[in-house]
Amino acid sequence: MSRNCDAGPVKSQLKQQLEQVTRQIQHLSSVIDHEGECHLADFEHIGDAYRKAESLAASFYLQCYLSAFTSHYEVLSISLQHLMDRRHGALIVIQRKDPLESLIHSGIPLGALVSYSLLEAIFYPGNPLHDGAILIKEDVIVSAANVLPLSSLVIHDKKIGTRHRAALGLTEKSDAVVLVVSEETGKASFAYKGALHPISHLEHTLLPETPTV
Image (tube, rainbow, N blue to C red; front, top):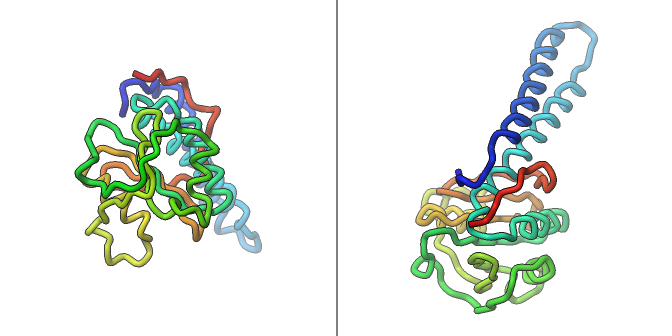
């Protein structure tokens, strides 16, 4: 975790939310044997509470991983949410400490500042650049339509699409963070250190300020 992230306030919120989930589960466990009662709504409430905690955790850790390497986390997170809402597939690489030139088959050079409009335009269906990955270094979109190495660990798993295998492949070989949106489901994940972490919704207001170095 980045030393720039003040984990205290967020961890306190996460503990409160997890304690709420625990209480709901304990209550459901105590009444589940009652005859003639349907508890589907209780399961739904537990799921909602858990997803809220998961959403906060995903947002917080993603910001921690990126805060020292780009000042445009909010732009990225809002753009990602828009892409999720519209089911526009996306693959966004954020370079951290490790150089990526030897791992990426370079696409089209851009050299443009990160912005909502450019990110969403690149991944608009039909745009010639939308199928590849964009590479972001600090606050600049370096290039688009890049090809990433595919993970050999999931190459035979039909449940994971090419974008996700590419995100895993790059993060298995570098410390980059890769954001992925599925055009089939609209669901998003971020890959880090060879693992995928689902993002159900990105919180923009609950996170503490994290200075950029």
